[in-house]
Length: 420
Ligand code: IMP
Image (tube, rainbow, N blue to C red; front, side, top):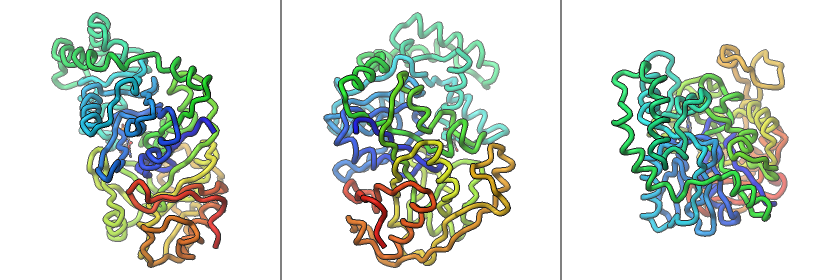
């Protein structure tokens, strides 16, 4: 199959980076279509940890061309830091990186707007990377775009346009002359990479190149289908791909990634969240601290009802379960299978109704054995196999991959249902 996508099925941090890394080896292109520096995809090439924020994970594979699609918002200063870090580790990006000339640019105005909003009322718990305000400017038609970075007059005009609208919302807004030199310098550095990414991808599709779309954040953070307003500002679901790359594409394989349990950072409802003491144990065991902000993540049981809904609307063709090893030794396990008195097949759109959901659980036996060295489904303990089978049957989508540790090789493919 020539086109695949990897998407988070929860509130981000499902371990997508590692799976994308594994799949990049068999793809010619790795493409980000939404989000920006809010993402934190952690990968361990050669055993050394690296966290990618803007750059597609394919940068770690010499045979992979990497695209930052027009659906992204890009902080050029941070992107250059990332490029330097990746190249410093020996992964050269010459002729392997394309930045859409239509992607929106995060400026100091957006960073200040984001932190100002977070510190004022109506906290969302954002990463403070300027994501929401940059997307807001795009739709308000006052954005700075990547193409502006490489032309002084265009950049100056774009900054003036944005500043005229946003300055009154910021305490001590920077002037255009404060912002211009650093952004121009960034533009000079990024110029060789800025191009019409939609055209490049159309050609790639025509030539039957193998393309991997790398989702960031997760389905429950989708701007339309997530727990609005406690969401990110982009379309994290499959529907975000065509708009975020600028051309039509038919994605054959949609891999939805879910932890064997569930986590969330930031504010907003999380029906299956564990009370503090129980949550602490799982958080420590799973090392659940944000890759971008270092914030402790909220933790809870997997919510299969939500997963089933998301898989349906995202057209997920297979599920990847990550961090199964973290559940070892926890005793009996629970999985969310619905909500008290709630008969609707989908999730509520209204945040008050969503926040009022009280989960109902199915208890499943746990297992004691350390499974981090397991590389075949049949070598998993019987209780782990039944756990996975329950997930698969409830959600109605097959589990195709299982990950049992952070290392590149600590994952395996499952063909059909895990046998009990
Ligand atoms: P923003 O994307 O920084 O505007 O943050 C909006 C919400 O999305 C907040 O709850 C963030 O914690 C969450 N979020 C953004 N990016 C990620 C991510 O990569 N992983 C997990 N949560 C994220």
